[in-house]
Length: 292
Ligand code: GDP
Ligand code: MG
Image (tube, rainbow, N blue to C red):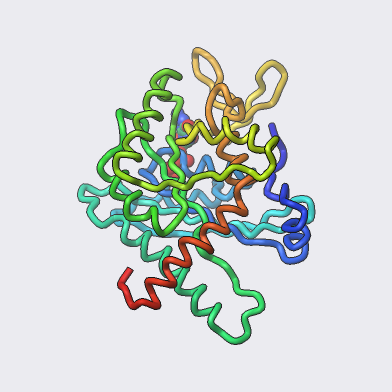
């Protein structure tokens, strides 16, 4: 089992700043309950963000969408990361899901507003940043996107970096999974949804490594917080009568690709795009007096 998260793998200059001040990252997860959101978060950050003592909001039954945040402080190679996980239990669980994205939009806008107010103050040496830097949108395995998936992404894609993820990918054969991913991408294109576009690295060698990972979008995830022993090796996995899924094996699912891209190689870019594109859009709409 890979024993480190990897967020401290920063370019030199950023690393030096981050060692001094630490940095903040806010990750939102959205999708129907039971798709493995909490499981994925725990595996990504090797922390019991959700545990038996803190089972996470989706364990409690709710009829409306709630937005609940959990903060954890992670430390690695001398860098402090304040990770905020924004969970949205109840999303898509109601009989009538019209407007179920509204509490999520309100939350995102409220964080932009907060930042805007703080930034405008005279004394603004260190503005806390609780803006949502990335939204993992969980799609259920099936035949394609559901109308709610399309509606949600269309309403959110200009406000936040959306990365589509297919949950519980172990319910599909590899062929079905490839077909499903292609279908999801086609529909995303047809509906002109702008998902987060992982930029190539400036480093040609890095890019060569990253491109095949990027080609896996939408990341098909199998989640597990159970450590199993396979051939004398400890792996995070799921055991079935016919075999074992090692979630950290790229032949079994895209978990490692997702974690590498979001936590290691592109965390800083996700923060920059949030600031330079999404927040800037919010600010301009606000200054122009347009109701977002
Ligand atoms: P959430 O409601 O989206 O947060 O889902 P959870 O992470 O709480 O997972 C719901 C249930 O599905 C739990 O029993 C998990 O052990 C299980 N689960 C999580 N990920 C997977 C997966 O990839 N495949 C399968 N088959 N089950 C999963
Ligand atoms: Mg959950």
